[in-house]
Image (cartoon, rainbow, N blue to C red; front, side, top):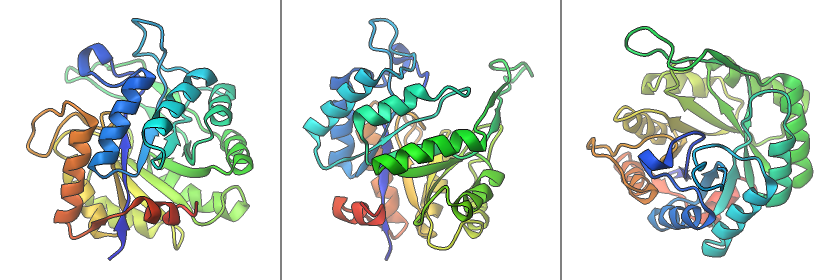
Length: 285
């Protein structure tokens, strides 16, 4: 039985902590990381927030903020693997690169392609002004160069099918080294749907030997997706960045609750949760 890595995405990009109580400060992030670790997660995915009082819903690319949060989590859970977000709009990636230098995570997300980032309200109006999340090849190359230099494992975030197929080309070109790690981001309205039936086809498009995980954005629909991923030999991620809802429809209060529910899903699907040593081996750390 292939072991299943469980990752927890502690907080999102713009989720308002006054509404959804996502962690923001180093202490809060360490608290939620410890909850995730105790529930069975071996990796935490980290976004950084502005630490100015009243501005905790805004992202931050200040290296001192990244280091403070990373250090707080390491002090609390020294074995827990850290995965930094690097997703930023536009061509200026100096902030994410500075955070990687400051925090030196074991893993970092690598947005592996561009996407029209869209959402419609029920009345047909745009939920936000239509935007393009641009990730051209030269931007991806700049990230991989830094990650390779720092010994950080890139985890390719794929929002659409063409991005999944592009990852294989990045490997052939020498931008990425085997073994590859892919995150299938499913549930963004203008990207891949949160549909388990897509998983066998997506897995077929990956290079042989690639490791992959599901990131389900939504409510109850994310849980069948994760179950199918386990059945197919994939890994899984949950957390307050991805969903606020447990399999029974109740709203989760903490990341620990979501990880505990995901661990149960792994077991129900016939899988075994990877230990920290098994996770490190799968990431070749």
